[in-house]
Every structure is written in structure tokens, then in C-alpha cells.
Image (cartoon, rainbow, N blue to C red):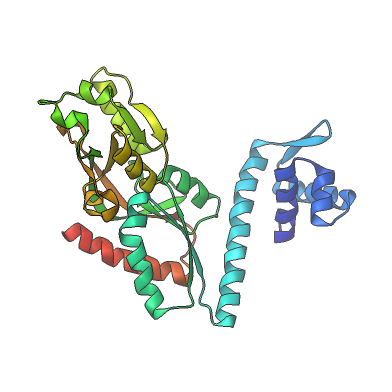
Amino acid sequence: MDYRQLQLFRAVAERQNLSQAAEAVGITQPGLSKSLRGLQQELGVRLYSTRGRGIELTEAGRALLAHAKLVEAQFTEARAELAGIASGVLGHARIGAGPAWISRHLPGAIAVILRHHPKLRFTVETGYAERLIGRLRQGELDVVIGALPQNRTDPDLRFQRLSTDTIGVIGRTDHPLLRVANRSLADYVHCSWALPNRAELLRQRLDGAFRKAGLGEAKVAVESDSLSLMLATLRLTDCLGLATTQTLSQDEAHGIVSVEHAELLFHREAGLISRRHTSYSPPVQLLVTELRRVGARAIAV
């Protein structure tokens, strides 16, 4: 199996049509079919079956497609890194970062690195960990910085803790709930919320606390992975949200305060998530080293 075969297979797998794939990669359809037959014979598995004018991947085909995407991502990284070295630009790091890291530690870490390596380039995508990890698996990101999942036994990923946070309920300074003495969980569940999507651990833990008390789930008025949007929404409405205690010290959180309840305080570990069998490129290694330094200081505080 060679790289060209993987490229041809990916073209077919993503289009699910032999003639369209052949046209896209500049090869005749008989030549493409011959390459795919050879690949299946070499691997000893059927990768797809014909269905009408198209094809449908088998379980083995879907597995190979996932690996083909990672191989292509690594080839792209290698070419970019070598080209960067040749031109004097050290490299390019593709980072996925949770909202808290975007507004706190990550900008400072990048600034420190750029002072010493001004030709580096960083592409940063924000969001909550669940979505970013999916992009990491596909080879579209080099590393994710954010909340660590509770289950860290994934054979394809490696995890490193950098900091611990306390997550609590927040709202605007004159939120009606602040005038309620001896607030119960029922008072919170009746409010509207601005939260990440339900696949995120933070949202699941909040809903879990409500369900445990027999109250159902939070009533979500705004769903987003943008911390800036969340804070602006809380400032302008009676919605409640969730954020780290450090968030309230930021300028962006002006007008937002804690509306805490003992049963709605959650402890969370955050850190680095990367593909287990992929080594860090030079710019990613520099960023990881700086974030470890920042994380060690945060844990010590």
C-alpha cells in the first residue's frame, strides 16, 4: 500500500462515485478501479460495495478512510514544516482551544513565543473540547487545549493536565435570582440559560445535577461555544451561564457576578490533548512547553 493508493481511495470514499473521483484526481476510471482492486487484494478486505451508480464503504473502508485522512494530514504537516525550514519560517501550529484558554493563558503563551520566534505562524480555532477533539482525530488540528474528559483511556489520544478550575453559575449583577434568599435548585432550573451544546461535559454535569434532584434539564435560550457571546447575553438578559471563577476577573466579564449554589459548583481539569502516535512539530512543542510553564504556575496558585 502506497501513499498514491491512499489518495485515490480517499477520493472515491469521499465522493462515493468512481467516475467523479477519477475526474477529480486526473486518472481514467479503469485505472482507478485497477488501483482499488490492488489495494483490496493487498489488504485482504473489501473496502466498498457498488450501489447503483455509486459505492458504499464497508466497515473496513470506513476505518481505512479515517487512517488515510491522518496520513494525509501528516504528509501536509511534513511538507509545510520542511518548506518553512527552507524559507526561514520555522513552522505552523494549528491549535484548538477552549473559551477560557482563548481569553486567558493562550494569548500570553503565543506572545512569549513570537518574541523569540517572530516567523512562526499560529492558527487558533476556538470551541468546547468535544467538537475540537473530533477535528484533532481527523488530523485537522495539532493539539487541543481545554477541558479534559473524565474518561482518559482513549488509545488514540494522550492527555496532560495543566490546570484545575472551579466552574460555577454566573449572571448579571442585578439578576433577579440574587434577591432570592435560600435559593433552591428549583429556582435555577426555572431560569433561562446560555450554555454550550448538550454534548459538552459541562452541560451534561449541570443537567445531571438537575435530574438528580428530579427537576429535568436546564431551559436553554442560547447555545454557543463563544465565551464572548455568552457573557454579552448574560449581561443583557436574565439568562444564567457557567464559567470558571477566573473568568469573572476579566474585563470582558464586567457586569457579571457569581450566582452560585453549592450543588452547582463543578471542579474541572484542563490541559493538552493530542494524537498519541504523532510527535509534536517544533512550533507545537514550543507552545506546549510554554503552556506547561503557565499551567504549573496556575496549579501552584
